[in-house]
Image 1: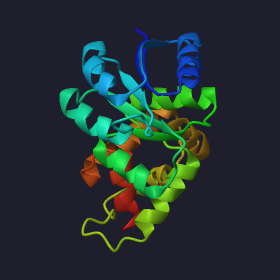
Image 2: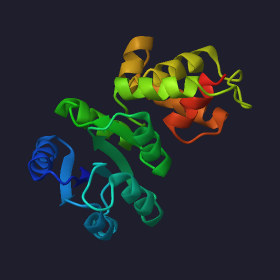
Image 3: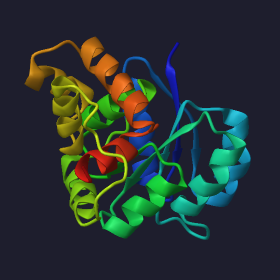
Image 4: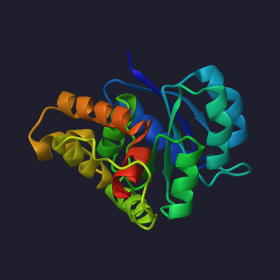
Length: 208
């Protein structure tokens, strides 16, 4: 079954380019496109895409508010922000609203496709630059009441890679383990830290 993806982007040319990239990629299909958040809120619950690529700067309602309203209607739908904004406030607002990932529009097509695959596997893709901003922000926060001492040495290594913005495939290559093993470690990390997202896990790791 192909991964069904919808696009919410007001730039018609970029919207068309993204749709072509998706339709040409093996295992992907662009099922719908929207130029504004208001129309997307009506259409996306009916389209039922696996993943939505969401811009932030939309006419009328912005993309972050769209995510905030969409998630209660379709909690299973994964949303990845694809935007030019890389300031910390926009990043955290989007993640807090329920976005599963945050990528910049200058992300290369191959990296975008890989990021979408990571979302489907339960990951939270962010470019290395974005992950670094998240990391720096968490490092300014005080100590956590839930440290990570109960993680094994290997789990600590995997979590350290996550905090640096590595994709699952990159973690596997760096640590010399299989992709499946990385996924198993991350599932254990989430369970031990009692978190559900990469961002929450990294936050606890950096506050240790």
